[in-house]
Length: 296
Image (cartoon, rainbow, N blue to C red):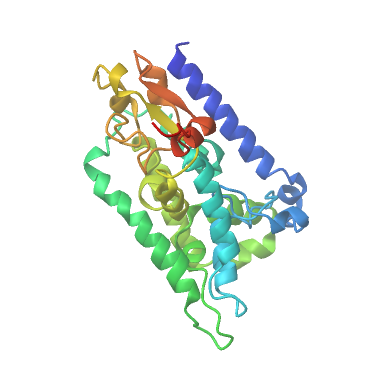
C-alpha cells in the first residue's frame, strides 16, 4: 500500500472513531429515546443531528437555530462563538476528519462507478452554501412567524439530509409513533438525502461543496486558522500532482489554505519535493508572531 492510500485509510479510521464516539448512546438505537444527559448541552464540531438516537452532543447548526428561534434570543451568540473558535483553530479540518456526514459521503464515493465526474468547472457553485448559511440558518430562524414570536429552524426542517439519515430513519425503525408521524416533509427531505447519496457516488462530497452551512463557516476561517498547510515556493517543481489529487478542486500552489480545503492531506502525500508540509498549529502560530529583532 503506497503512502497516499495508507494516509486515506488512517483518515477514514479517524472519521469512523469520531462518528462512533459522538453517537455512542447505544440504548437510544434500541428504544428510540434520545439521550438528554449533560453532554447534550454541548456542541460537537461536525454535522451530527441532535435527534439521532445515539447522539451524545448537539449539532451546532441545530443549536444555533433553536436559540435563534427562542423568544429569549435574537442571535445565538454562544454557538456562533463556538464555531468561530473551532474554525479559528483548525478551520475545515473539521470537515476532513471530524464530521460524520463527511464520512458518509467519503464512503459513498468509494463505490465503484464507470465514471467519476470532476467538479472543477462548478467551483462558482460553492458560494451557494454561504447563501444557505445566511438565509436558512441566520435569517429565517430569526423571523417571528407565530404568536410566540418564534421562527422556524429552516435549515434543519427543510434542507438537512443528516436529520433524516441519523434521526428520522433510525427512530422510525424502533418507534411506531415516529412511523405514524412521517408525512410530506419527511418525503421531501428523504428525496434530498437520496439525491445527495446518489450524487456522492459520482461526485466527491456534493453536500460539503455546495450546501453545508458548517462548511461555509469553517471555510470563511480557513485563511485565518492556526492549523495551516505550509507551502515552500522554492521547493516546488510545478508538477501539478497536488492539484490533480485534490478532490475539493483546490490548487495548493496558488492558495495552500483555500476556503474549500478540508485539510485531508492528500496533496502532502503526493508532493515529490516536500514543498507542501503537513498542517500544524505551531506553524500557524509562528506565521502570526514575528520574533523581535531589535534595532538594526
